[in-house]
Length: 281
Image 1 (cartoon, rainbow, N blue to C red):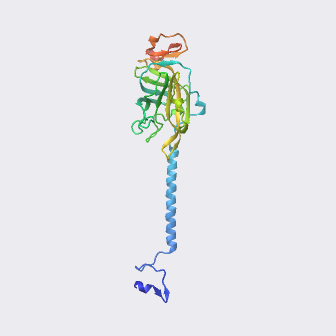
Image 2: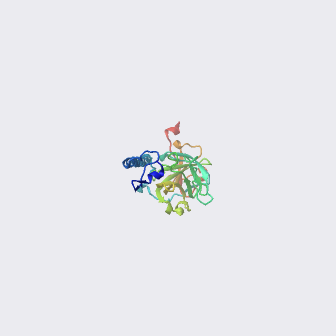
Image 3: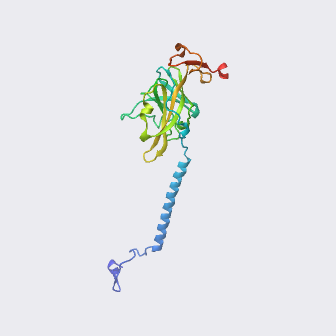
């Protein structure tokens, strides 16, 4: 039947009709059921996706954060210092860090350069415009907390405690040995740059990484973890750590400066030999 034939039936105007192929449209109840099934399926998929993200996030290993008990002190009365020598590597036994050191400066916008997340997340970097480790002043070493692949070189930095040791091997062969005095976390919006990078009257070391909560919107951590340490001893070139001769201020006899191979002493310094089984072989 043509279009004209469908316009009126028995004098009544046709306002609803099925298609010209002769098949009636599916009942409203069928369409409603199909829509409901599709809607429920979509909701289930969304819920499954959210659950998967939740499981992935909960399964992530979170970096340890500094405790209030580890806050300690940010200054030191130590007066031992070393001559200028570029740092080559850093060793932090308490958290399993043993890394060669990159030497980085600043970006074009004046911000500090950081190691590449793609190629160097497993390496720490010395900020080359800071004092060399062991010099009077603040020496700064930085590293990532994590990367696209997982934990990075300073992942466990927040687990350090006052008294832990940080060894930095220098280009002249001497190893500068620092003792942690405090571990603190600062919001990046209130980062105390002067405290971290400012001048000091002793040989200070700052270890820095990201910390706190992660902002998924910006892709950045909201805080920084900072370890404060001071130079407490040094190991001469050619000596193994297990049988090291170390210099300690304030104990025993004085040592002539010539013996210290570049160690500058501004207070009484002693030579103490720690003999171990390995050292007697």
